[in-house]
Image: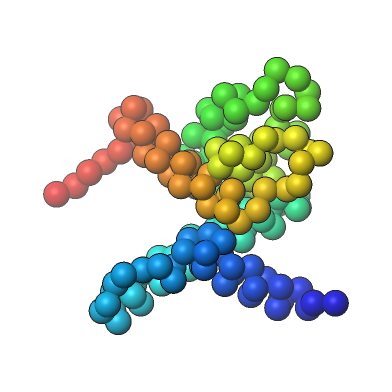
Length: 149
């Protein structure tokens, strides 16, 4: 049996590598640039791991991985990603991490059916990328985006 901590480390490296962020494919040559990219990638990888933890634990609040504004955007997106039948509805209460993970997974191409295997790293990376773009546009449309010189 694999130790739980070791498994999380394996998931972290899988997220950084080809299963997720494909950090190995960088063409940066400067050590300092690679270090900065790695720090950024680690922050995204931790967020993906938080989503995986939330997917499996419906008692965690969404605030672990998402700001209040991001949760508002997720609330706006949720109905657009649900189908007409009960099987296609987000089964989790709003503002918990499982609810947010369900939305991110749907944005990443997951069908949303419980009969399908749970969304994995690749799906969550795609969904998080889609969400970040959508969130930027959502803030822009509401006049919440503040750009300073």
